[in-house]
Amino acid sequence: MPRTTDINDDSRISHGRNRLSLISSRRGIVDVQFNWIFVLVAGFVIFLFIISIVFSQKHAAETQTSMSAMNQITTILQSKQQTGDVYSETDIPLTTMKFTCDPDYGLFSYIISDGKRADLPTTIMFAPPEVTTNKILIWSQSWSAGFPIGVFTYLTTKDYMILIYSTPPQDGAQESSSDPRGYASQIYNDIQGNITRKLVSPSELQKYSKYEHKRIICIKGDCPDASEAMNMDYLMINPGTKGLYAYGNVTFFNKGVADGEELPYITKAGLYGAVFSYSPEFYSCQMSRALGQFEFKRLLVEKRLELMQQDIDDTDCKNTMSVALDRAILPMKDPALNTENFTSMYEKSENLDSWNTDLMLGSCPKMY
Amino acid sequence: MKKDHKDHNRGQIQLGETTAVVIIVIIILIIGIVFWNKASNSNVKDIQSQAQELSVIDIANIVPEMPELKCYESSVSKVKCLDWYKIRAMGDAMSGSGGADSASDDKDTGLFQFYNTYFKDTRITIVPLYPKDDIIDINSLSLTDQDNPEMKKGRIWNVTIYDAKSANKSVTNMIYIPVNIKDYTTKKTYYGLVIVEGYYNELT
Image (cartoon, rainbow over all chains, first blue to last red; front, top):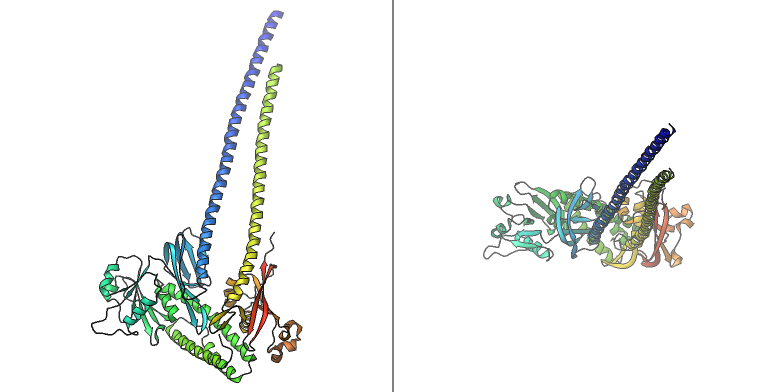
């Protein structure tokens, strides 16, 4: 019996050992599996972390590059508003720029290809709605109404062509500077030479019909006929009685539409604003912003004249200043974008120039 | 029996080791993220402070170049010369538009907004310095004298042409630019300073 018991004990012990050994070996399997799972999970987390850092750095670098391109373009555009009658060509990274002008808020901005937007709150710029280029051409003209107001800038690229429509003179006819052909030649000669422009006769017009970015400019009385006009956009200039660069109207004709939209222009700067604008809405928005700036500058001239009048003893000087203030500076307050107002503004600005010369000749301080 | 006990203990140590490694890796990761975050934050602050200084310097350089303030002779602008009456006109116009020296806090008017795009959050003061004999500080006059045109006539005092002061901002940077100030009514030229003070939120 005791032997049997021993045998039973031995087999029980041996069974127990086997069980423990089995449990221990299972724990080993669990340990090894856990280590592998841990390595996989931790590795995956670290991998994700590194990938996220790489992507965030890549995104930051891209943002930095596009911001630096945008800053570069903005600086270029803003710097051109300092001086009039300056032309420059600037290389930029290949970019698509969309120019927008909000007439309700008077906000002008541009958007570059990746959707980033930059405001140009003080810049009065006339440009196509969208340009894709690595070189921008910028030309500028000073705008004044007697006193200086600002600088208009015109942005274009080599792809945009200005076609100045002009019928050749008939045999023996003399070209006068104030007839449509004379004005067309004047525009051709005055647009900066590096800007793509051509003086075209009616027979040559068809050559450019398939050209994508063309802008046809004509003077009232010498414009494409109805059949030609229906196939293209064009701008008709109707100068006032004082010449091409005084004041007048411009009419924007859209392809396929018989009636155009007529808007006024004032001075050479304003006329080229219309020439470089590709829609009446954009032109009128920029001109409204320009008139807003005109009002600020007019207010400063008004205040300066009032202060000087108080401090000057010379009666003649005082009288001339008083006349200028009452007949020109004050009536020009809050100008509106219409033909009548532009005509009156031009006449008053001519008077201001004349009074300013009188002041200078009378050894008085000038008004501006 | 002893060997089994040893195996069991080794299993426990292995599991403990793994857990410790997990915890250490997590701690190292957290320390890394915190350090990176702090480093990038301090970098942002440096850039911000540098940008503020540069912005004040830029504005100080813009002021003497503005046609609204510059001296012109025969339509030619003079370098670093400001027209005294243009300065006073701007000061007057701004004070009427909620800008410089205005009692009202209304800074929504067009004129102020327009010049805000140039001058941003700053105060710009023009101070004539030399010759002293003609200069009277408006603050030293009695109220009656300040309104007396005879006292004002030919006299010069400091003019704040623009002030974008707001309650939650304080002055952090100040730049002085020397200029000539021309009074075209007396034909006198003064030596003076354009003082540009930047208002900024405190950097925390």
